[in-house]
Length: 93
Image 1 (tube, rainbow, N blue to C red):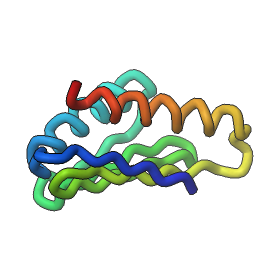
Image 2 (image 1 turned 90 degrees about the vertical axis):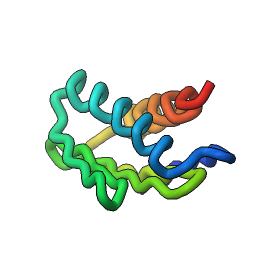
Image 3 (image 1 turned 60 degrees about the vertical axis):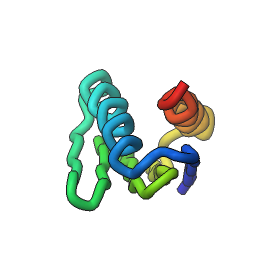
């Protein structure tokens, strides 16, 4: 289960959560994923057919955990992980 953490020095949890929520909303719509979020705890998750991702936002950082079924090829897992990393790296240009 890959875990991705990105730090954004000087950014509040609210600022980070707003940006992450926008990105997750777009990904969920594009890939027809079920997206659930909790504004109070600044967490969210997307899922479809055994593939899931959950994120948690704190001051200055976000952590994303990905879960894939064993049937998903490693190359596809890597591509998904790299895509999420790129999106997180571009949150605050």
